[in-house]
Image (tube, rainbow, N blue to C red; front, side):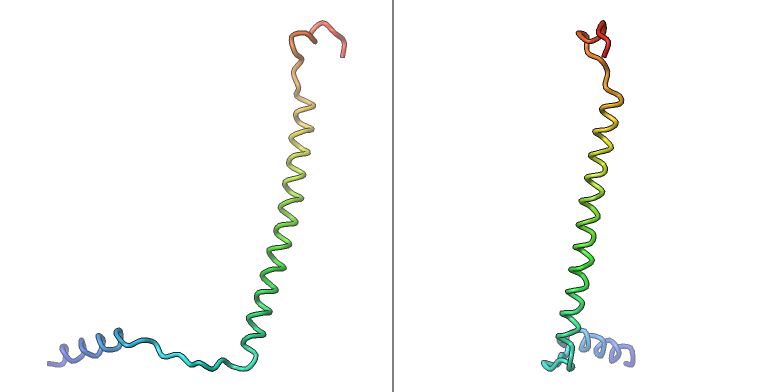
Length: 80
């Protein structure tokens, strides 16, 4: 009988809803606001760095395109 009783205990525990308190500790709201502000600052920094990195990549592509530009058929005889 002991294993069956153990099974009932486990079933009862898993079927009960979790108990939560409606009261929050003092300062919990401030902690959440601080965490949101911190995350917002990190995301803003990442956005700025990504835009700088993208601009640098575009400049590099443009520079590479100027250096590796092949002459067109009409330009072959001309001195550039």
